[in-house]
Image (cartoon, rainbow, N blue to C red; front, side, top):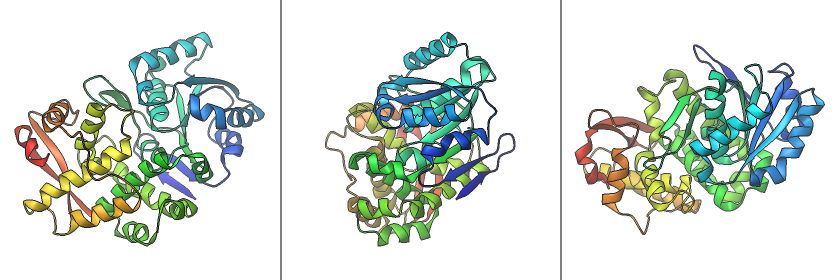
Length: 352
């Protein structure tokens, strides 16, 4: 399956194909001429896939250097970006060379940020190895690193030259990593795709979802593709992709990024904000219950035991989406239809 992301300045294709990782060198050569390649990965993915990918690239004439960072959200930092800048310099990378992100969302965001900023831009490709990265962070061009006060505070829009998705890599994901990707698929269905919601409703559990991975990955990608094409730089309609994220990012920050996963935080954020929206009549009745049932089926949390509304509010104040003491929050009209609702920042506590 090939999907085209059609943008004004930098269009590209997403290829979804099983067993494509072993043949990724030929895919890269169909996009790039021979060049130096920095294969950025983390310590976990490095042990499983990096050598296979490096060999495939070298077989096609690329000169490949593996650049590994520690696994975990802590690697999405300015310090780790500087480490990669140093490695690129030591290996004499120029603007003609490229970076490939091989890993989950942390690797993709970090490698993309480095590609966007080193020498004002290197060629960049995404090979996401987590379900979360496959359906969300690998497409759309958002790259960033975290600061202590907030997630994704320093970043840029930098579209890849292509994205390669191999659903077979999901076989090596632990259940915890698999289900956090499911949270983003549920989000995509909730905001824009009732057919995807119905498909998820028919699936019994995570194992069944993994067996028909393409059937859920492709429609989730189509939701994001369409929104990105309409609003590449996050000024209007693309904001609906943030459903659950305002509260979710704050939970991640306050709990510690490696204490609770992104997907778990977003699941809690979706429930929390929908509960209040339903209470005040902005969301159709029974929407929260439907959302809770779907998340529970895939073993995603609905609440957070250490939820501290004061700390969550403080984290939201530093959210990059805040404009002039106003915040656009994303609510559901009903399952399959989202809306953008501007609120005063001093009223956010009502939603917590």
